Amino acid sequence: MVCCLQSVIVLFVALRKARKQQQLISKRLLREDTQNGEGKAGMEIPTDPLSEQEVLQLLRDTQKGTEERKKSLSCLRQALQHKETQQKFVRLEGSMRVLIGLFTSSLADVQMEAAHCLHELSHSSDPAVAEACLPATSYLLTYLSGHSIEFTSPHEAVLEGLGYVLSQLLQAKEASIEIIPLVLDSALPQHMLQLVCSNLELGMGVAVEFAWCLHYVVCSCVNNALLISQGIMSTLVLLLLELASMVSKAVADGLELLICPVLRCLSNLLAEEMEGCNMQVQDERLLVALFTFMQYFLNHHLFIVQECLWLLNNLTADEPFFCSAMLTLDLIPALLQLLPCSRMVALLVLTVLCNIAEKGCAYCQQLHQKAVLSSLISILTLSDAEVAGQCLELLHLLFLHWPEAAADFFTQAGLQALEQHQHHPELQERVRALMNLATQPTAASPCSLVSSAAVPSSLP
Image (cartoon, rainbow, N blue to C red):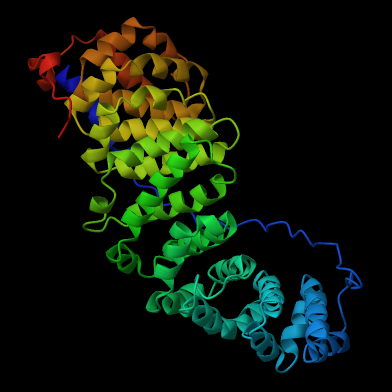
């Protein structure tokens, strides 16, 4: 039995993967513009790219009276949806200076339209357009870091628009060198965090936009140590607890749009593996919040389940605190129920279970007691090679730390489930190693010397 286990250990050690998986930064899809294709009364919306002369005329019209200025800016905003018009706009001398001047005006409606124009430009994939937008960055930061009531402006639409523009700039190729250091050197991260957490009564839109801004700052990894030292993680945990409370009270319309970037921020910060990082999140209520989200959004927004599992993976990767809490709060049955949801969900669930099993015999004993084996046999019978491979890894850990689990597995039709994968080229060696255990006598595990009743309810 010892020799067989040693061969299994050698085989599986080579296949172990890093537990913490940092989420890839992804471009957000453009939000539908309610005014797309629809002009305001008396205003013609250009359907074709404008000529350079037409762009110049619109810029001149923005210097006229207030109504003419707003009308011209609205036309410019629509025109800047065309790549050719964007290129002509930035080539005109002084065009960005005029637009920034309008953005910094004292008229909220004019500010809003100018912000929309900046927003359209920020979507461009043309390096020349992106470079032309850079001078606007310092003005955005100055505006957002102001000290007036309700974070510089009572107009929610202006803040939401600015948040969206900033989120696009933070995704630019030059952002990590030219933009994000400016953000981190200012008070803006704290202001953004305040907006995300404290202004839900103003509307979800503002909180969502600045949550994505925080996400892109975190994903840049420019100076996450600074954000962590400022207590961002504990603040985000408290926000998730508040959002879970709202979900429990069925006040959840649109909350998934905010929950997603907040979960990503926290997941990526946990991937930093910095000293003191985990201490900011060690709260069992966070696990309850994650399972509240997963149960509520399971049928309509499966992506939230995946985001929660990514965070749960990072929480349980190295830290025994959350592995113990998963067992003492009896959350394993709820986790197992997610296995049939989708292939990606199954992989994430199995990864979390591996994180727990990796902690040793007491953890594997309790996983065994919570009927993990029957779920694994079911998923092995139906799953593809990648999911089956993760199942095999979990079985290896259970058999290694709690050999009694191997005996039970093979009495529950586990051998037949394994046989389905014995000819798969990527799995056959691991399957053969586990099947060999069926013919070996059960060895005593260190944990078997302690009665079940003596295993502490709260693991170290």
